[in-house]
Image (tube, rainbow over all chains, first blue to last red; front, top):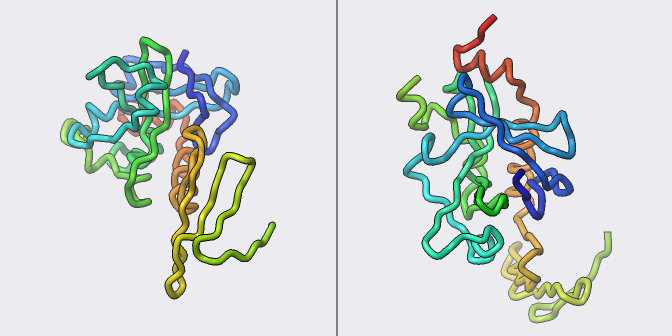
Length: 130
Length: 75
């Protein structure tokens, strides 16, 4: 279980999620709401899809996530599905920072333009493998 | 909507712990300063809307759609 203290935009009141992985969906994972069974969204680790993208984490968020000095969270981007991987988009404007040890997560809005909310996976590292 | 007129340098207090100050007005642009507790999330409207829309769209995805996009549909 991962607790997102303030929920996610726009689901502010839904704070508890689990991350579900299936071998045949790698490297994508479903972020499944614990509170609303029909709410789930696909995510992808930034480290695999956009390794050059370095999101910024505020000190407050790092403290909430209970990260130790020098410890990095796991970053996930929320993905909008499309008929092909190339057309799918990742939300780099508001990636999720997660500390699995503490079971805590935070949606961290970056100081970027609005178009970063839908970055095509054709621009990602995954496109090379597909 | 509550409508208030303020001059540059004047403030509005919300809930006792959020302070909105009009810093400067130049032409059609207003510069606003906001002091708020760290748990209060503040966004430009268009940024918030784009995130909300993208996450909403993401929440409509189905496992079948994902596996088809990945070319791993077992059917």
